[in-house]
Amino acid sequence: MMHMADMFKVFAPYRGNSVVIPGRGGRHWTQISDQPNRDLPVGDPAMGGHASFGLGVALSMPEERVILFDSEGDILMNMGALPTIAEKAPKNFYHFMLDNECYATTGGQPVPNAKNIAYEVIAKGSGYPATYAFDNLEDFTNNIEEILGQPGPVFVALKVEPEIENEPIGNRVRWQTRSRTQVIDDLKVELGISGP
Ligand SMILES: Cc1ncc(C[n+]2csc(CCOP(=O)(O)OP(=O)(O)O)c2C)c(N)n1
Ligand SMILES: [Mg+2]
Image 1 (cartoon, helix red, strand yellow):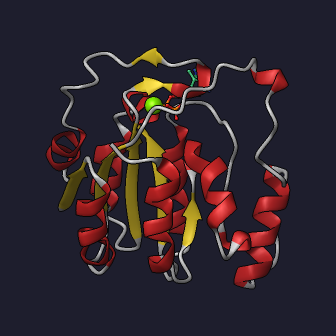
Image 2: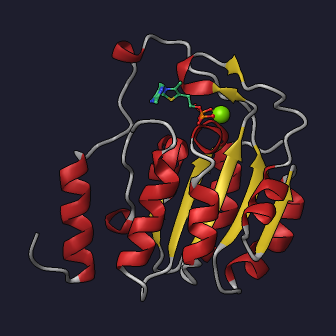
């Protein structure tokens, strides 16, 4: 298993000008990102939404590379997103999934059959042309260039340490420094998009 922060450090040099949706790993990525105005941290939305949101972003700006860090709880809640993405086949979309085998944000409740689910097989069976799975940093490091060097959609399952949060949600220090509206406004300025 990898630590999320280590995984993001390996990924960071390959980010280029990509738009990054850091998902539930956002609290680590915001410390590392060198282009925060190209990041789309959407906080803690309804589970299952990240993949559809990422697809929408990718389809709406085909000239930008869009990289999503999804989580396995979200994927399980909305598996229909996978064939939808595969059918739309956005060439600019890279779908990473952080699998910590539990619902860490809400206290670490176990994900059913967590050790045996092959998410990359599910993605492949949903129609993603390229899929990967890594459970250690070295293999991920050796493959990141190839992953991002090919056209999307690509799906990458990553086993990460469960960094379980037990503090009541209302007492946690917020890692989000900007509101969702601000995040979207900042990206629009960055990309030179005007209008609503
Ligand atoms: C529809 C829905 N149900 C419940 C929640 C509460 N909730 C927020 S995060 C979370 C767990 C998410 O698990 P996972 O996607 O595996 O990410 P992790 O917390 O492990 O990083 C839950 C149950 C929610 N946001 N949306
Ligand atoms: Mg999880």
